[in-house]
Length: 343
Image (cartoon, rainbow, N blue to C red; front, top):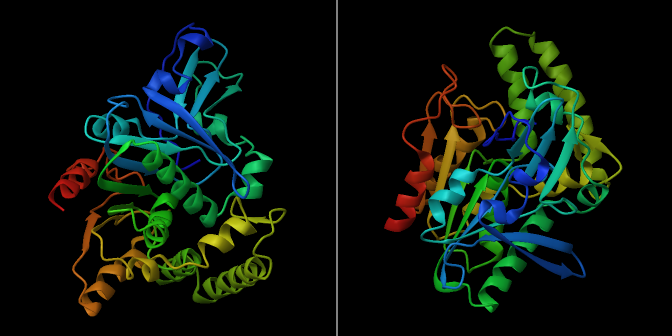
């Protein structure tokens, strides 16, 4: 569960009610929209100044059908973990209406029981067998995430939450692949920030990965080619059955892969004239920088000046240093918020 961020952890004998497991515990108000095509869309808005109009900050998180909150019930402890970054909420709620959506068919919070003790507690180990809901698998696609977000924006505008200034779409990891298409399709978006997303077809990352292993001498060039050939065969199957939800590779349905890998992020980004901020991480093995580096190159060729490209040097997928696992300096969230203020 590489996209999971653990933001709160308590080891003590506290019952479930005492733990932050409800939206209101995070200062969020729950909303829902029922759509004939998309099904149930659950979303949350921070309660700070909720009666006042404000710009919108939409947090589009990473991949997987995980709830935004987990309660972990162990042998001698209780803990909560979040799959959204509460720092974003805390740093935006004073100026914006912070907005985040559930994935389809996914509750805000779920409970997992483990036989681990507080001393043994290992969050990735606890979550590795968590099963995504059937509804998530049935519905999740690039199109679902884009269309659901557009519905939420329309709801907030219609119900007078927006002050007619800025609508910022901030996407992390898979969310960084969502925001280019969202901005192309929804002209109300005024700024996008794509953090460790993709620049090219996501399948290309795997191909390049094999080539790099061969170039580094970790495998032979023939082994790399053999692996690429197998990968291309699997990719062909995905494109042949683009709506299949009963077939999977890499932990995701064919439908998920086909939808995200039929739209190249760069091709969407080049259509935009609004300000774009892209963060890449030079040591990221989940969203390798090689495809992302292509974006500023092409923007220069095209004479486009609306891109801010900001690589995090020596950083992994979480923008932490690979040397000491400490968060990168400067604070990229604050850099993005300052950039929005200036543009």
